[in-house]
Amino acid sequence: MIAVREHQIESRRLVTDGAIIQAVLSVAPKSVLDIGCGEGWLTRVLAGEGISVTGVDAVPDLIELARQADNADAPADHAVMSYERIAAGELKLTVDAVVCNFALLGKESVEGLFGAMH
Figure: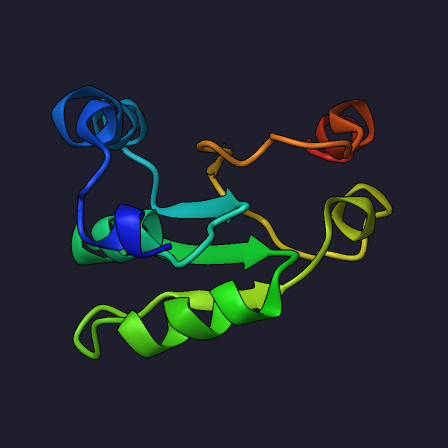
């Protein structure tokens, strides 16, 4: 958590963070769902660009950190939700783009998750 927030991971700082930001901005979405948002670094960046952002993560402590770090001038919505609950259709949200950045690591079934996206 701290390593991401404080930009301590060199490959992310030099390449991947900027690449995901540019990839999202290149499709000019008005709204984005960030699945596996962690402590919310990407939700903050996108909200700062004027995009309506919802970040979800299965870890309540990470969602709390995301909420605490939100920019009051450009807040994002954050919710605790597992991949399984999203795949089951419990997240009722319409967005222009869905982002999963360094989020699909683990035992979760991504097939069900992506199958739930329209």
